[in-house]
Length: 241
Ligand code: FE
Image (cartoon, rainbow, N blue to C red; front, top):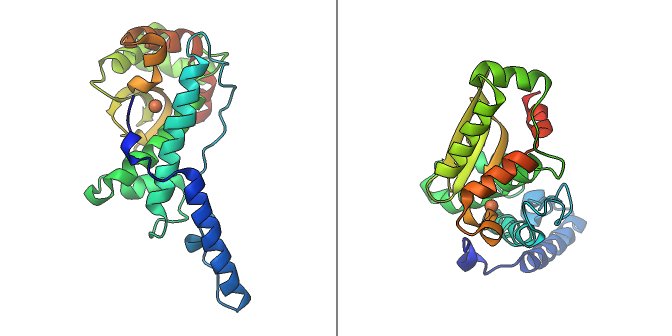
């Protein structure tokens, strides 16, 4: 539950103040005829996207308290850390996806990868849940589930297994690879986004901060609740295209 705690020395407010000051200096330069570079003004920053529902809308399966901390503290910290780490670098002004891909697998950019990938993973996770979730996929996605897993119950079983058996922190995923649906698990901030052969369709966060307030150590109960009541098959179908 305590990831990032010691790296939260720069708050978003501090960073924004710095960015505004930089923009003001740059603006003065522009008035004198010098070009303004968006990459040095901090004009394009990684944003914390709004939740696609209210903080209490996933209750009782995931409480308002969990969402408040998970989104408002953890996800926000990843955004703030990413902005702080790219400021003044060659990746300042780059898109989130580009930052994740550019830092993946680079030992000197491990911190940037961890934070930026966690921004992307969490945004994807919020969309993978819905107050009206659960149930079954339909249409093309259901047909593919039936041909690749046998039936929906088997897919659900595979997703639950991936989520429950991921050792330590990480994620369970449904991805499309080579025209087939696959269930995967990734540790820490690792994400299928960095593999061009894989298209993420949905994810389940299994870091303790995702469930400990509501379920304590009972990760299987959290995973069951997500799969029975919250998982957003419409989002997966949209990603499938
Ligand atoms: Fe999380």
